[in-house]
Length: 497
Image (cartoon, rainbow, N blue to C red; front, side, top):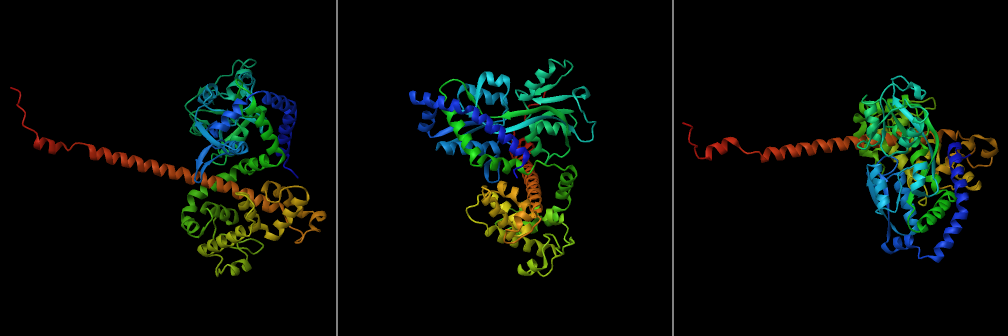
């Protein structure tokens, strides 16, 4: 069954798209009479330009290059048009809207909500997500449950929809005050909250879901705005050919499942949040991981060592002597037959267990059909590691019979729990399985992997910064004049009489 949250907002998106159908036909007729200057220009130059924000949910440079939900969605649109995507990224909302107003970008893809003020200035493509505004504070401080409970400093990003919402609220609640910042992005604001420089801020629910994987002490006070639609804004000036193409594009990716799969890739595994589990994992990364990291790096093979480490944490919490009631043991919790098959003599030897687990996971990955796209192939391999390839393929077959895509994790994970129901498993090849367990297993590992990747990249950035500072200091030292040498070779100056 489709995840209820996903179903609701994608159903709303579909309804909005249906309402736009008459508009599509109107625009299409206008395009036939015009030169379609917007799309014609894009086609001639061979690229379309998008403005976006740097951030975890929009656009950032990862280990494998450009990434982010908004980036991937915009890239799919550019591919739909058959042109290249040109990114113009900014840290400032004011700068982004200025770029759109001046025509330097064709549209904005930055997780922007549709507001009354923005509707007066811009057209919007069909909505592709639905979020809410949350007022958040630091864990351990007194929780505010309503506006009247706010006793400290509230800070929000300037030019955001949060400001517009606060202005509307202030009309009926004059005591409400806040500060606006153009210098800090949403992540920096959260850090200031954690450092007790401010008491509260407002953040969109999807951004919060991702951010709490790295900053678990950020807690929700209350919902400030229950439901808002996210969409791409476009200038009202000029023809509507680009807008018409966007309406058709979003209709296509909604119906073929691309939008749902992309949403699952970035947000599907962070819908559930456990403060204790997240905090415990972050502490373990500092306390336990350094001892075993060289082994994960050594035996990762083609796997990202951080994914291998995340698997191990899910299996044993990095305890070499871990064991379960089912008899699996060690860092990677291998069964005795699997250990023998992998050539492992001692399952409680950390190095042997990691070596065997890495080899076994690589085999699961290699057995996945090549047609399965990345990263779905990884998630399928993880599910196989947990429940077995046979049961996974049973779930994929159920998915196919029900009209879903057996090569997409977002579709298959909805059917895996059906393997617990007799009316389904009695027709499968491998029979009954606790199909909800591999779903939870995969989603947990995805969360650990995200957090570990973020922490590792932050550490690398810090080390690079220290190296740059050391090099700069060395350059300054080398460039500094040798005072004693100058005195030795300088002519003697006359003394004052």
